[in-house]
Length: 217
Image 1 (cartoon, rainbow, N blue to C red):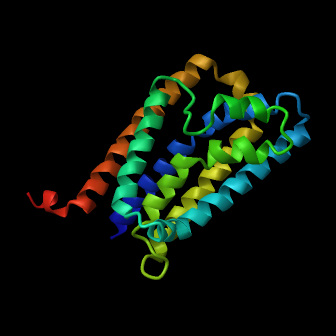
Image 2 (cartoon, one colour):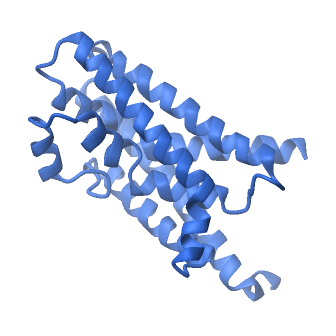
């Protein structure tokens, strides 16, 4: 039991951390806050992480109910989510900004936007479709009444990841001076490979749930 919880905790934290990709958010953050003073940059980072936290906590608790409301089975959503995460991982491997997180138009328009902390930084960069899909899939079998510990692990992983993201955004100037574009691309490719592996596991889990007879052989 303890080993299962440890494995679940490590898988949950790594999944959420990789799909959010704080270094990827850092590049966008540097672009849209380039001409801001330090106080405004700090406020943008804090506001973005708070909004992302609210979004992810909401979908952790109510994502499965929304799927049921629209008649979508969790196995179908798990497979679709795995395909989405696999595509994001592929774009990370090829060192491209994922269009599932933010389009070029959103990035351009955000430069003069009043609420850049909410759009595009909080959504879709931090709490985008990939991250929302991840927390829904992770929480699908962990209702609060029967699996409170597992649900707590998911929420703790979300909060810890957002704290890490916030600290990275606050240290943007220091990190940008230390990490070159080449080093960032190497790190991003490694994360992309790991995300693709997580996506394949999601797809396998979804197929196993949709076609349980396949797992009996």
